[in-house]
Image (cartoon, rainbow, N blue to C red; front, top):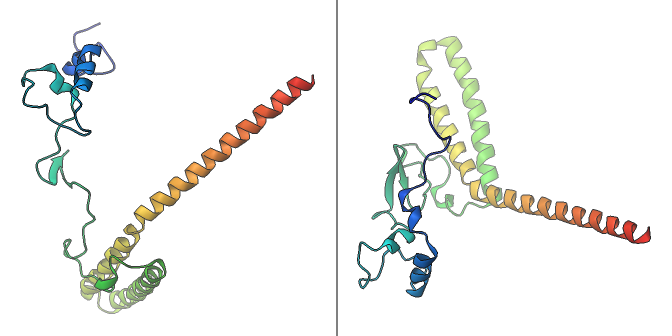
Length: 189
């Protein structure tokens, strides 16, 4: 084996795993710290190995950088105005937009997008150098459609989780029925 090849497929464990001993865990539980505590009481020296058993503190502000991307804590959906895009549907309905109203707005935007495409085809056939304004209008409509669809994400995630749980329950019930049938056959024999 050459020196260039890795000796393990996985990286080494973090250095502080050695501090997770039964003695340290019992000493930490004896402190009766409230849940989600990120610092030790002042009576414990800062060099104590118990500090490694606590979760790290949250970032000092709600914004942080990870992997070159800016994140907010908690994650907030950007508005169209913060992205520099004109909002084409009513602003008053942005947060309280009910399902039928969103559908109406999405249909209106998709019909407008189709009409804008037909106008773009007409403009390009007559004066090809004047397409930029119509293309910008279509981009704004697409951004608005995308923003409205993204507002459905939490609802969609909840619905998908409910469906997965129902499917899991059905699998458990089927397995239970098969098990009981096997037991009854074994008892009859």
